[in-house]
Amino acid sequence: MRAAEIRTPGQAPVVVDRATPSPAGDRALVRVLAAPITPLDLLCASGTSYFGRPATPYVPGVQGVGLLTDRPVWFPTSAGMAPGDGAMAEYAAVAADSLVDLPAGTDPVAFAALGLSAVAALMALTDRGELSPGERVLVLGAGGVVGQAAVRLARLYGASHVIAAARSPRARERATRAGADTVVPLTTGDLPELTAALTEAADGPVDLVIDPLFGVPAAAAAATLRPGGRLVNLGSSAAETTPLTSSTIRAYSLRLLGYTNNELTPAQRAKAIRVIATHSAANELAVDHETLPLTEAATGWTRQATGTSAGRVVLTT
Image (cartoon, one colour):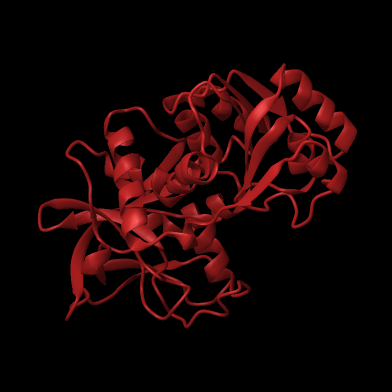
């Protein structure tokens, strides 16, 4: 079979011929249809992540969409986090109890682009953020996959007004297409200036902030919250620390919450995947993505890593 292979951490994968896996015990052989190149894949393959330097060579791909016989399924792997191979191959041997059946009509590429990023957006909004119909939501980093999904899902789950913030013109276009009412440029690191811009765009107190950025954007967004408002942080793309002050938190009794997909049980993750898949199959939820054949894995990897792709890169077999 053809597979992408990481041979040296920090370098793009090469496409090679490998033996098709022969699963045994509790493993199942999935014919892969689509595998996204995610930030976690890039991090694991860098050799500098908190998982440590991966054993090489290995096939990357922490998630994928494929067929088990004729059943469309989503599956996770621990590629790059633990010894073993992942989804960027024609076939993958995965734990049978980790497979999640997908509804008929699911576009494997469109769903692969959503994947666990959309799960994070869903759970940050609903489970952690406790979004109620009629509430006002501010989404930071709204041009990324998590951000685009959060904007669309906030709409689906009844938000009355969605404000988005994104850095580049292309990212702001994505946020607009996702359904944001107002889009604010994240082009300044000046806290008072950004706070003023977000406050003006919100045109009223915000109930919930979805924050994959942290840093100055999180502090500015927190200033738009109503008393008792919630900020859910699920990333640190802007910075690992924030200038958010204690007085701001205390004066408005704000709730600062953290979220990670790692806290989900397999059952919770499967339930969330099915929810995302249902919305995807109904054409209610999608994110910008770029499709490349597996043979162009190195090109896709580089485009994703350098931010020059037209969205989430998805490899197809």
